[in-house]
Image (cartoon, rainbow, N blue to C red; front, side, top):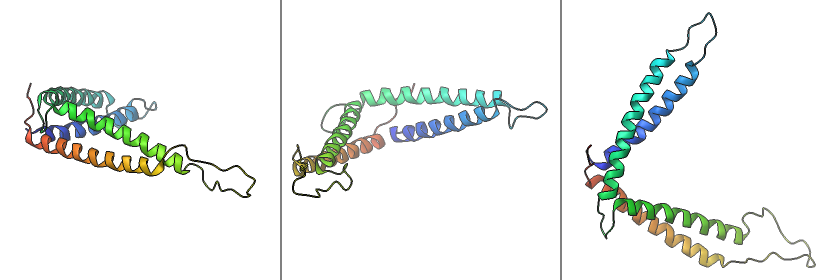
Length: 157
């Protein structure tokens, strides 16, 4: 099985656990004299089975990510960490540029010449250019990760 397939299975398992959780919560209590919508203990047992499978998948994915080498050097785990930090950096730079451009101040316009002007403490154009460069790097790293996910075989238990 390819790593990408395991990632899809992991996502499906997470969704399934959430569905089972909601069903357990909905059936955990019922009014005297009525029957629950479904047997909560059975649904809870199903959730346990899916969680066991999820744990196995996560272990295999993590093991694979930490040993899979990517183009340009490093492991897949290194690339994932790089992408996560690039996304955070992009978010901070974009927020700073938006704030410096006055995007947070809806309709704040100077009415009279005697009023104080609001000035930008940061170079908005430079921040926007930096954000664009970061977005490009995020796309490149993400493409490398996705390609590797389809090329690498999952390490089995």
